Length: 118
Image 1 (tube, rainbow, N blue to C red):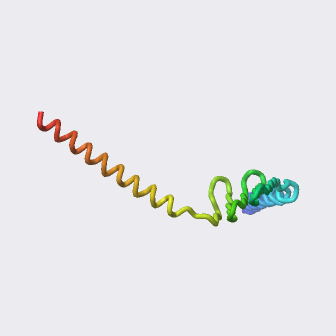
Image 2: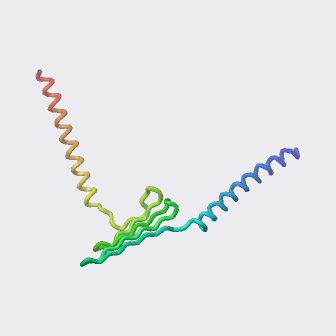
Image 3: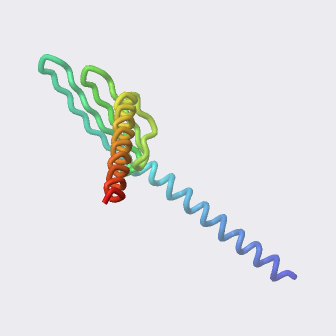
């Protein structure tokens, strides 16, 4: 009976030690891995600026100013925040895709009819 209790305590201790080790690794990464940044600015008749911030390649923030401010934040490859949504472009793309599929259906239908006529 006592050996079962000691086995449970041993497993619990190993799990707690693993979790504590992971927490220490994450805290050390936050403290010791630098944040990289790069900024460019230019003025030739109008002002342009671009800035990039990244941490471990996991988190990225892109800021640019070219007549209007554009900010984009990404985690891995997923966009978390973007202030310039291009809704017009996506809606035009969708309508052209619908027209294209409608045209292809019509062509397939005509092709089937030609085979039936022979």
